Image (tube, rainbow over the protein chains, first blue to last red):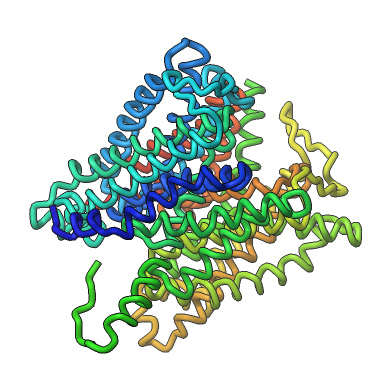
Length: 335
Length: 288
């Protein structure tokens, strides 16, 4: 493990920030806590996607499969077969892992290339949405209503928005931690070499199939778990939300705005855009539906035009520029 | 038997318009190497422009082309020149994210202006039917079929035997060599993008009669376009047109012979199989 990893984990700012965020439920009113919880959902989703889409450079548009499996399959198992939601979450995560491995295998076996990979995963996502909406077991077009949240932890109930906030915080932290671990472990170096040049990576002995499968499985399992927790939080597993390709597009845009391939980049994108979008939706949703999505779209266009690496590298440059200005000549950080 | 013929006719008629959509994208891809993920949302923009013109001036969608075509040509040129070109030169893959952003902004811009309830654009030919033996065809579909084939033919002729067509093919084959021969590559790229989006204004007018307009429909058109584009082999224009027909027919056959769900996924399944086993497209030469 790269020493950088331990340096980040030992940094006091990280822990102070985490404690500060974790104490939000004690003083935020419920409406804002709800927005904070949604933000964490997208922080977790964008960070999980980043392992495949950012670090490995595989522009997957099929992540709605994993969110959908986590949200709808686990809910269906509970409602139709009486399977405990915790168990259902694990089953859905296993299914997502298998789907992810299958997609990675297709990519490897047929040498899809970045562009075709994006196209084919979008086709998978469309197919998955049609299947989910036509399949009664998964709730069909009307979705699945979960039982009321009475706070029984053994049933994966967290007692309303406060408990859900902490669960989402845990998942978001886990997703970011997974990014940090991958980035600083050999896997992260393999994935980045695959991102930059698949043939060269293979020529120097980086296994394509194994590493692609690892990235997809880690990302898929995390995404699926977030999906289950998200459905549980909403108490309604909505196929048009959880299994829709639009969800993946949102995730991709958040990650791009924040900074692809960085541990904290996608989280930053979601942190900036989701609260803004949700507040706008709350205030103007009746008059101008879609304004928040419009804004997400406009933001990503602006970010790509002005600072294509994303906002996080820009902010880092600003800070390190100020700090290092006197002793210029420090080697530029390369990632 | 009648059922089969009916499905085939229906599929071919609709498929020709899919082919036209994909031809626009194929033209852009072969010259600029970019794939536009907001393609379908421009179709939806074109259809909503028809709707607005119908609402304001009671124009038939076919007539409103006189306005929508120049508007979309200009929009296409501006989008390419000011959004895509600066990014495409530096980060080719970023164009995917950029056009996804354009898609989200367009779709929801339409939602904000026109609202989420379905709209309709009527046309004088809408209710007319054409009988061919026992096969019944709706007039707008027949118009769409004839117009799409005519346009595709015109496009082939332009590409083959005009100066601008030769310039486009030159850039398609080798942009550097074309530049050395005095072709203004950037101008060609802007123009093909504008033409690709302009074709969508025509496709939108052809699709509009009888189709309920929803702001969210753009993504579906994008995916259908991508299916036809990849099936056709990305840069093989004839292949793309044929692929559009294949998608249309498999959609129509799936709707009739399979359950709703299975029928709807049939085109995607056909797509995935062909991409995996014939990545060069249905008409492509095998890469040996």
